[in-house]
Every structure is written in structure tokens, then in C-alpha cells.
Length: 215
Image 1 (cartoon, helix red, strand yellow):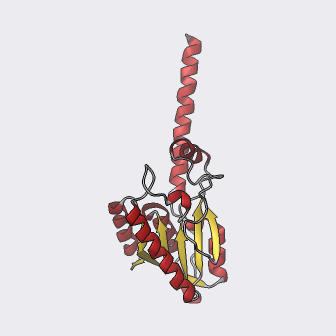
Image 2 (cartoon, rainbow, N blue to C red; image 1 turned 90 degrees about the vertical axis):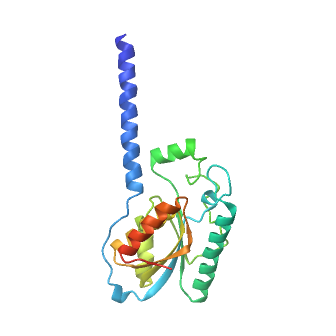
Image 3 (cartoon, helix red, strand yellow; image 1 turned 120 degrees about the vertical axis):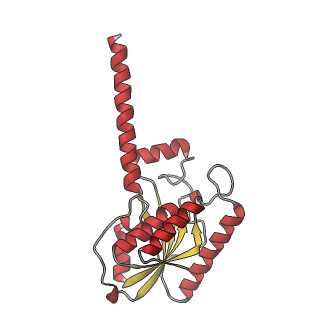
């Protein structure tokens, strides 16, 4: 009996530690980063950010897929924005997501069809873009990858045009990460995808309240 109770207690403790760690990973993954504020007067240039437009995250139908018409319309807007940016000599930055936190990765492997975890065949871009710069992040905020700030500084970029998915997660967290550092943020609303339309509207209004511009 004592052995059984000890085993049950051990399972309970391990389960509790798992939940605590998972909550920590999720909170960290979904919190905008902070950093040194830029001198916007020294950053006259613009860049277009294409966030998480990857094969893993842009399937049609099924449990994790999008409505086909909605997806195609938004992807077309992103493609158009990228073409116009290139024509205007505005750099296009592709930001791709790969889940690396151990427990999040485990949960996605079990319950999320392995989308976005290391080794997935769908980590590449879902659009035929030729980005000027390509970075990989493991947290929702693109600024969690130091390479982004390095590129923006080297190219004197102070205004960011945001597109991509999901509006309620990586787009809004990257926007907040940019605002935390003093960047000008413009969100191309028709080029943002979100599964939670009402949630995205609330995030968009909050971003406007912080100075972001929605077009």
C-alpha cells in the first residue's frame, strides 16, 4: 500500500511540475520582448515583415487549416505587398517560426500534427518570395531573434510594415516588440490572418492606442 501511495504521489508531483513548466514556456513564448529604444531620427528607412507564412501554418481545411477563400485572399495581399516593396527598394524580411521549447514542442508533436517543430517538412515559406533577409524565431515576437535588430540597425530601418499570421499571436507580439523599442509600426490589415477575428480586432485597437497605424 505504501508503495502504491508513493507511486501515485510521484505521478502527481511530476504532473504538477509538467503543468508549471508548460505554463512558463507558454507565457514566455507569448510575451513581447523589450530592448534598447532606437533613435528614430536616424532610421529613415522602411522594411516589410512577412511573419510565419510557412507551409505548416497555411494549409486549407481540416482541424488546423484555413478557409480556402480567406487564406488565398490574404496570401495574395501579402504577395502584392512584397512585390510593391521590392519595386520600391524596400527590403522584405521573412520571419519563420520553429517551436523549440521542449514541452511546447512535445505537445505539438502529440496534438498539433508536428507543425512548426524541428524536422517538419513544412517550415519553408508558403509563398514564392525572395526575401532580402530571412530569420527564424522560436518565440512569438520576431525581436526575440537578435538577427532582426541587427539587420534593421545596419540598414537604418525605423518603420516596419507588418503582414502575416496569426494576428492574435506573432503579429501583435512582434508589433508590440517593435513599439517597445521605438519603431514606427504600420500593419497592413488585409495582409494579416487570424483565426480569432474578434480577438484580433481587440489587439489591433490596443496597438493603435500605442501608436501603430492600421491600413
